[in-house]
Image (cartoon, rainbow, N blue to C red; front, side, top):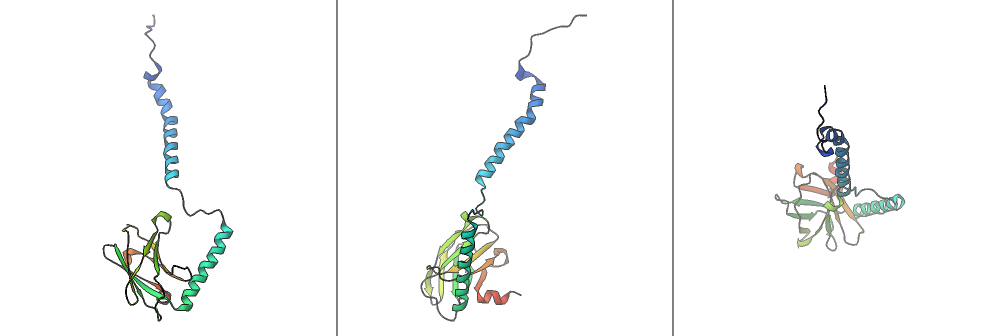
Length: 173
């Protein structure tokens, strides 16, 4: 018996070549996809200068203590459509100057919002919020000089109001 020899097929038409090369090819593609995810989702929370950050934390605590000694507390109320906010100063003494409101995202720094407040009445301020579908915020009210601050955690699913300052700490068990 004689074997029939035909013309050799090109390598790219061989089924075994593609079967054996599919695994390494998929690994290379997955590597590029992983690299793209890493580049787009960089972590903002990593800091190289821990000593300086520790000193800054002590300054932040002094601001909290300053607000407590001044008796500053407030209620922050968000509209139903999450486009506006009202801040009611519930302190014994009215605030001097116009405070600023910050909505801080727990993990994404680019999600933070600095809201300029305008005085609309005695101990009443109002501002515009950029709507965001975030389920967890840190709300901070502070003076523009950075001498005091009051803050609290806010979960929008639990209500459109958050209390900042002394009254907030008295309500927690």
